[in-house]
Length: 466
Image (tube, rainbow, N blue to C red):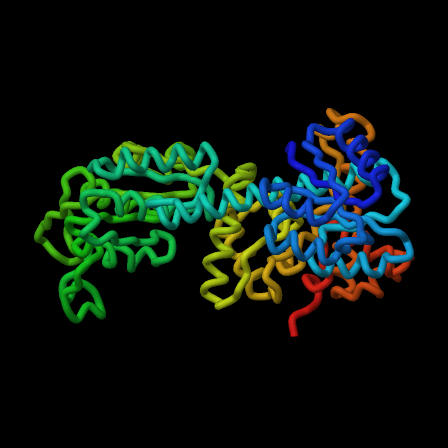
């Protein structure tokens, strides 16, 4: 992203040098100012994504300048420049909200890499803000979350289908939200004032399911001491949702077909036919056409059910939805657990977006719930998620996209990924003990801290909960 950068230093030569380096290599707008108080006035007039400030300045030092900037905008990324002799003060500045510090003399590549990282961070902040705004403004389909074209298409079809009487078949892998779509259709239907009754065709044994569905009369079988109303009668004038209909036995498929065709059924043990006025919605993770070929599912029942069809997509590959769902579940479980967690770190989001999610949305929800429970700060981090992926390689593999980049950019990107994953792996194996992790890496603790800072990683997220 092209942004606005403010440089503040009392040495005019330093201002010119920095402005030339950044302007020659990027499309960013760069403003240079030698007086920190004037710089504050400039900052107050128009937003800047990044501020580069010297630490030692006569009218206002870098720490006070940083505090004044953060009072105006908490989201601005401030980078402090310092000589080696004052590096401890620079580290203190990062604790007070500085994004990073650069030691003088510096290399041109170091400046440009820092600018690139800041702008990537700012892009993530803006995207996260847009996602939160989208959640706040989202009307209808409260339990369904999605910004991807696939989900937007589903929302539009729900609006079209809900007011009709059409029978609906919802297909898709487990955990994709089939029941949520069914509830949204009922919620916006003309029957929303009546019940939506759900029956899971897998969870109830076959010898019990018929009685649950159609009810029974007294004496129909051993233990039938009195008449029992079935779920079909309970859903009268409302919606009957048949979940996992692909597991329905052939006998019950025949009786359900009659209910769909004629609106008629008989309770178990009864000789009297009853009428039911129902809207039917069914869901399955089976390939029903394959089941028809294998003689496991009636073809005529399939065509009765398959009037209006929703095919729910797998979560893998829907990056927009993954980020949006992360914040949706974060808000939900932070509220339920009475925790003040407002953000998800970029590293955690990137890690989640790299997962395959065989359990789809349900799996992501479980991960975020676990993360909220273990999180001890105001930001959900990778270590809080306790992801267990023993079958995956420890480090990210080369992919085809990387070969489309110039060598230097590709190398920098792979090194950045390596640093992040290496540091996280060491902290995970050391339970967040930085000294132990540095010792395993064979490097100084201070250098390991710098690697953590550059990767946006905090040790607390890897420490076991007490």
